[in-house]
Image (cartoon, rainbow, N blue to C red; front, side, top):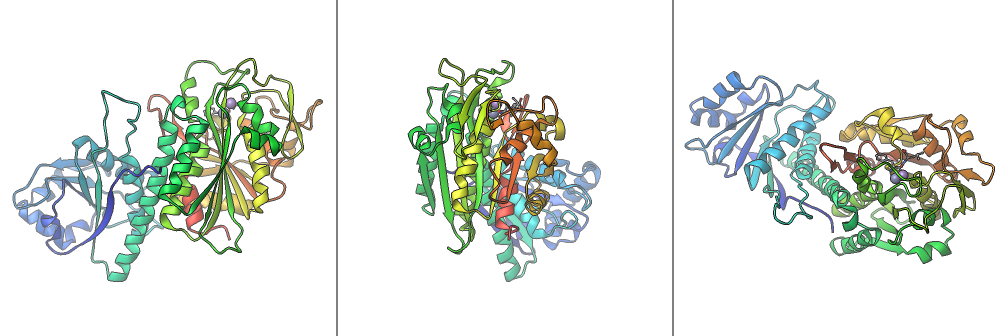
Amino acid sequence: MAHKVLNNISLKNIESSGLSKLKTDVLVIVINKNTKNNPSFKELNKLSKNYISKTVSSHLKDSGSSIMLPKIDGVSASNILLVKGLDEKDPIHKWLNMYKAIAHKGNSLGSKDISVMPGTSAPEGKDEYWLIEMVSKIIESNVYIFSETKNKTIKEPSVKKLTILTSGLSPSNLTKAKKAAKKGYAIGEGVNTAKYLGDLPANHCTPRIIEKKVKAMTKDFPKLKVKSFNEKDMQKMGMGSFLSVSRGSEEPARMMVIEYKGGKSSEKPIALVGKGVTFDTGGVSIKPSPGMDEMKWDMCGAATVFGVMSTLARLNADVNVVGVMGCAENMCSSKATKPGDVVTSMSGQTIEILNTDAEGRLILADCLTYVGKYKPSYVIDMATLTGAVIIALGRHASGVMANNQHLADMIIESGEESGDRAWQLPLWDEHQSCTKTKYADLANIGGGREAGTIHAAAFLSKFTNDYKWAHIDIAATASYSTPVKAGTGRPVPLISELLLSKKLK
Ligand code: BES
Ligand code: ZN
Ligand code: MN
C-alpha cells in the first residue's frame, strides 16, 4: 500500500504551436528571461493579443509570484497560470516552494490535470533534468491531502494528472528527461507514503496496523520481501531493550524487515533502520499534555524506511537495501517499565532505563544489533529521537552524526542535491562518558541538559561498532508542528537520492 496521488505524470515536447493547442485545465508557464523567445510562447502571446506579455510586465514583479488568466479565445487550455521564474542564484528551497505553490493552486481550483512549463533556467549547478525531477517530485508530493479520518468534510486532491512541458529536446535528451520525471514521481510517491503513515492518528496506526500495510505493499511490489517479528520472536532474539518500550501498552510491538535485492547478489546491502514509535506518551516519565498529539509522528523514521523501499521497488533500482522498522507504542501502565529498571539488550549490554521517555534509542539499540547479521556495507538509522535537535538546528535541517565521515558527507551531499537538507553534529569520544552508570553497562540518558542530540547518538554508537554507521535525527524535520501539523515525508527525498545516485561505493 504505497500512496501515489497522481495517476499519471508524462512529458510532452512542445512544438511551435503546441502551447495554444494543449488541452488542459491549467497551463502553468514559468516565465524566465528567455521565455519570450520560445516560438510556442510567442504564438500563444500573439493569440492573446499580447495580453500575456503585458500581464507579465505589469503585474508579475516578484519572483515566485503568480497570476491566473481566464480562458483566452483560440487557446485550448481552460486557464493559464503565469508564474514569475526565479534567478539561477536563488536558493533551492525557493524553487521547491514555487512548484509546491503550483500543486496547491491546482487543488484549490479543483483542476484535474495541470501542464507545467518549468521555465528555461535551473538553479546554479543544476541542469534541466534536475528541474524536471523536482517538478515531478514536488507536485506529486504536494497535491497530497490527508482525509482518511474525515467523514462529512472530506476533501480529496482534485489534481490527477501532470504533464511536464519541454521544448526542443532531441530524442535521446527526451529519454533522459522522461527518466528524470519517473524518478521524481517515484520519490514523490515515497514521500506521500511516509506522510500518510505519519498523519494517520495513533489509534489508526498501531504497530499491527503498520505490519498489515507493509505486508499489503508486497502485492504492489513483489520484489519486496517482508519478514515480521512479534514480541515472542523478539524475546527469543534477546531484544530486552526494544521490548521494554512496549511493556506498558496493550498494543504489541512489531519489528518488520523489508528486503530489496535489485543489485548484484554478491553486493552487501545498505541497511536502513527506522524508529517507529506509533505514540510516545513518555511512559512513566510522562510528557506534558500540551502538544502531546504530535507524538503520533514519532514513527516517521519507520515511515521513511517504508517510503524509500516503495520508491526503490517502483524504480526497479539496481541496489541491495534492507529496511528495518522498529514499531512500538510507549505507554504508562502498571506493567510499564519504571525509571531505574535494568534490561538486557540483544548485544548483551545491560541498560539502566533512567528515563522511559528516552525510548527511541532503546528500540534502535536492538534493531541496530539485529541488522548486523546482514553484514551491511553501511547502516543509516532515522529517528525522531530528541527535542534537542529542534533547538540545535531549527526546523530546516535534519541532524547527522556518524562513525564514518564519508557516509556523513554523502548524506549531507544528498540533502543538498534533493533540497532535503541535513547538517552534521560532532560525535566525539568525549561524548561517550555520559552513558556510564553504577547499575548497568549503560544508562539510556546522560549529559543533563547538554547536547541531548549527541548524547542520544553516543548511546546508539555502543551498538554500531561492527559497521559504518550514521544516525539522522529527524525530530525537527519529519513533521510540521502547530499550526500546520502535518507530516513532511522527510527524509525520504534525501535517502532516495543517496541510494539511487549510488554515492555509497
Ligand atoms: N519522540 C521524542 C523526541 C521528539 C520531541 C520528537 C519533539 C519530536 C518532537 C523522544 O522519544 C523523546 O521523548 N526524547 C526526549 C529525550 C530525553 C528524555 C533525554 C526529549 O527529547 O526530551
Ligand atoms: Zn519518542
Ligand atoms: Mn520519548
